[in-house]
Amino acid sequence: MRNGLSKDLIARVLGAAPKYTLDELEAKFPARNLPEGAMVTRFAPSPTGYMHLGGLYGSLIDCKLAMQSGGVFMLRIEDTDTKREVKDAVDVIIKSLDKFGLKYNDMPEYGPYYQSQRKDIYHSVAAYLLEKGLAYPCFLKPEDMEEIRKQQTAAGFATGIYGEWARDRNISDEEIIAHLDNGEIPTIRLYSNGNPEMRIFCKDAVRGSISFPENNEDTVLIKSNDRLPTYHFAHLCDDHFMRTTHVVRGEEWLSSFPLHIQMFRMMGWVPPLYIHTSTIDKIDAETGKQRKLSKRHDPEANVAFFLQAGWPTESVIEYLGNIAASGYEEAKTKGQVKSFWDYEMRPKKIPMSGSLFDMKKLEWWAKEYIATMSVPDLVKSVVDWAGVYGNEDNKKQIADIDYLTSVLSIERDNPKRIRKDFITWQQTLNEVSYFWDFLFVPNKEYEYNKDVLREFLATFNANDDKDIWWNKIVAVAEKCGIKPGDVAMNLRVAMTGRTNTPDLYSLMQVLGGERVIERINMVL
Ligand code: GLU
Image (tube, rainbow, N blue to C red; front, side, top):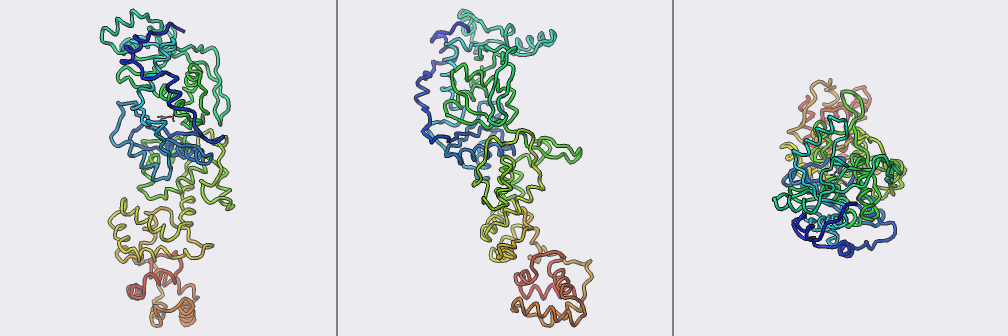
């Protein structure tokens, strides 16, 4: 420990006297009044204008753990890196959470939820550390740090501001005053008490206790340019005073885990439980190897991709939920639960190493999900999607809602045999495109039996019920000496251009007598 600074000097170093004492902060943000076992979680994105699939995965875990335990899920905007700020970036995050159905509870008493508005809190905690000699003002300039780095590299030492290399670690009050009088603004650094020869044990809810060398880096707590905190310091203050019980964050934070535990101990605070999630991976098309989803190379790394292509957001959530809680799929297939939200997930079972997000597997979840939708919900989803993301053709397809509704109603009345060929809203509209004359592509390759079509047309009546319609097909088959199935195939291809379609009678009903006659005549 070094000598603490006086109140006056602290005020000068921080630019103003701190607003609160630690006791005042403790009283301002009291322990939460929640039932035993309730988890308090948060999604803490930096507003970069991009929402990564991994961020959606983490926030799903946050939201689910909070909901199933009767706790609270918060959204905290980590906007302390003013250099990286992007316009509308917060909007992207809020809209994505909303679209994927992840609801957070806004609890004003534990806010504000933008870190840029919490300076008073960070400065108050920093003042405490300065007073106790657990932090100090550092006046190293970029060129000083560059020089230190060069010397360290040349001598084969680890780079960084630590121990002997931390020039201002034991800076005197007189020196501080001289720098301040000179108009310099210091960074505030941790006065690290760690010894890298010793080990620190850090508890992760999934990985168990992990031991690391102790941290001896005098990490920056408050930056000099804008006097805002670094991630490390903001995490310490926010997750303590927001009374977070579980920090779900990416495994890239494991390396700073010892620093965070060290800081909690210096403050005498109980750290939250950490859950470091693994990366979301894919199989690389070229190498065939599993690798992390890349923001630069993989469109699906951005959650906006799923919205644009019209994937049911629920199915993305279901699949991500199954990655986080692998028992879910079985419980769902057995009919024990309806959706991921009904499934009790266990934090301990969250995977520790790279989890595969396979688009083929997502298709299965999407088909299953769409199969459970009611026709009005299905129509609404398709219409909503096409209205925003659809092309001109899609927009024409949704113009007549009644017709679209009949088209999408086919093979949805028997709960045991719901069609499972719809995957995305975009693909759904493509799948049924032949119902619109302007999109219908006649099949010119197929070798039609024109006699069959002529015979069928001769007795066709659009008002026939299914039995009569079928009897007529059987009669045509007998007359022409072929199987009824072959008659149906000729009709199917004439109607749709395809050899594989849902129920022929239903689709002819939806097409209507006029179109049926027209399409047969087109072939003839
Ligand atoms: N802002 C950090 C990030 O985006 C948050 C990490 C955390 O959840 O603590 O990675």
